[in-house]
Length: 71
Image (cartoon, rainbow, N blue to C red; front, side):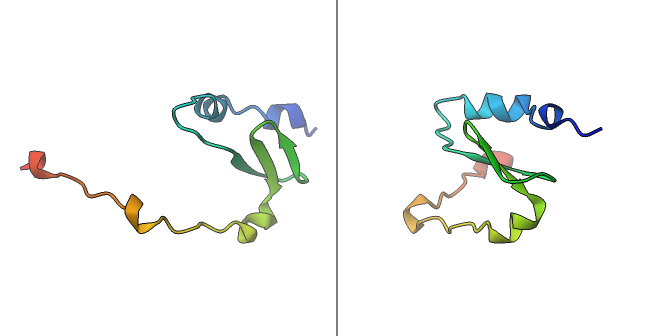
């Protein structure tokens, strides 16, 4: 039998969302159920994945890595 309460337990995700230094406004969780919102988590049916778009980062946020310590 399908138990929605079991599918909404995301301890690791909840821990990350609760860290104020990360400043994560919301998280998307793909599921086999209908659209729903609980706190910062947005549950989306799997077929809605095609509507999620990643916005490119602004050029001033591009970082360079110092790999000199790997020699």
